[in-house]
Length: 285
Image (cartoon, rainbow, N blue to C red; front, side, top):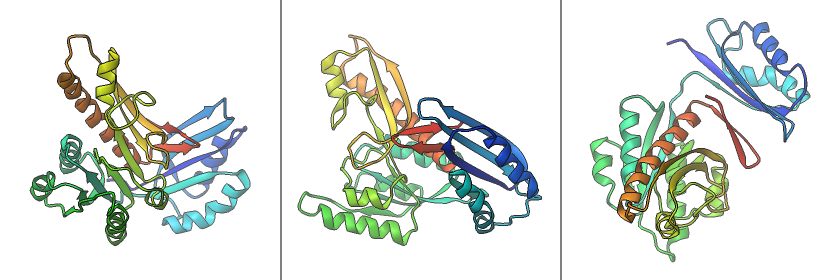
């Protein structure tokens, strides 16, 4: 497989940015394979994702790229990140009792859809252990109560650190992470919420939607911030329902949406397709 690199960046919009970046890559022997850009008119912001071949590129690693590109980036005011190759990112999955998102991610990983290493599964219940054992992934059961929350979170952080985790996926993990945990992994925690945010935040959105008599239900994947269910949204999907749907069938339809939006978000993150600015995302397809 051809070795590639990906550059994600954003900055204040102005003329000549695409040419500036293309000229830099050409100067160092880069052959552009894919490029996409977006201008947010309201913010006056320019976003770009550019992918190029490393076959003849004379900056052999990320460190060399950083050293060479940094002066140009500073002058241009770029916020940027570069990734060489298809390195398998270490990922931790956190789950409680609902297993559908976890099982979906494990299967997609097994068939090669997700370019990562699932290093461990952490749960406050034992329910997920059989799936972890089936897929030969270390399972850590860390039960939690209000009195033990701080101590258990410290154990979780130690597990993340010892496994060099770079992405935490909350696959229906029904505990609120502390501000300290979120800050440590800022921009590296993806959650799935069983509602079309910002509607019906909180613990039982399907019940709230059923009581409200809505005609559409949804699911949302988003990055986690200190404010519950208000992080930058990555993906959403909806399903039509009617007065004939009981609460149980509404939940069944919602679970399908949850699996889809979470797997999309994880894959796009791993493929470096998401650029965040403020509380919004630009997702390059």
